[in-house]
Length: 223
Image (cartoon, rainbow, N blue to C red; front, side, top):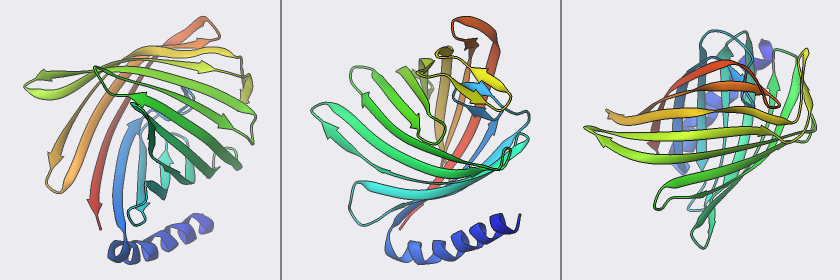
């Protein structure tokens, strides 16, 4: 706990300096339940505050976030950049963190490739070098105008390798699939987004149980 307080103090000291020098986002998300690679790993609500910095006019970013709830906590630093190739958007990203549930380091090397017209699709490949875990996630989205802006989606998650998640051994194969809906709004100086996803979780290709995941996220930009 002393280590967590020290990290949070450093973050609070950085924020005023960052605000003077570079663009930044302050974000807060409330989600339930805690999930990792398509599987529920805790009950209850998770609160996740964080901050993302965008140095200069470069297309890259770095930041940190902290989460508490769902029978665990974690502290994560991350970074990445945006680029494009023809009509494809490409976003490589890395992260390194500490997961309090198992007192262990977590890592991620991730790359997302997406396309926005005539409908949006994206695919993410995620590798955890420390755990030897590989995961793939794909999603197709359709914008819908029902008085408010909505986005409907279908998604699929795939374990590209077998790995151990706490006491459970996860096999390679399908991990999740389902449908989602999201909307967004302006709340004063904040941008707010509400999303809901539901679908079965899988053990390879056998259905385990229905999963429902909801998240409310708020972002305020400055700089």
